[in-house]
Length: 121
Image 1 (cartoon, one colour):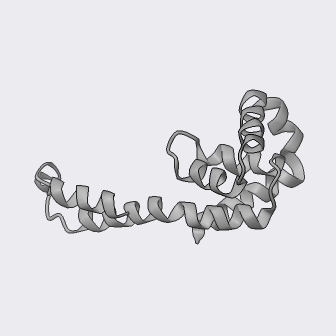
Image 2 (cartoon, helix red, strand yellow):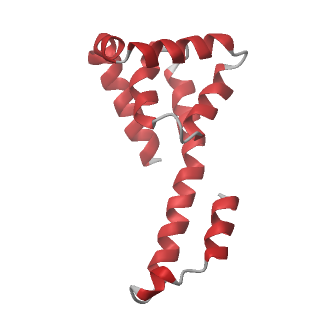
């Protein structure tokens, strides 16, 4: 939920004050996003795949979203759904690290347990 609130905050700041700055500062990235979204049948699933993908930075989506042809409500929903896997992985990793007793355990971590968490998240 906090990820979504922060992303919406970035969206609102970009929408109210920085749309032209973002367009001038990142023209290639913004035009690429606009082109890809216009080529898709469903901007919802495309935006969701971008949100989940580690190749597209989240900050770029947050500040470029006001320049894209979808509503803020679609952005909020996709951000909430798309941040679940990343947040779950972070929580599981933190829980695993909190169970370690000493610095030596970092090197002896149960790799199988880490892999299970990453595939289920």
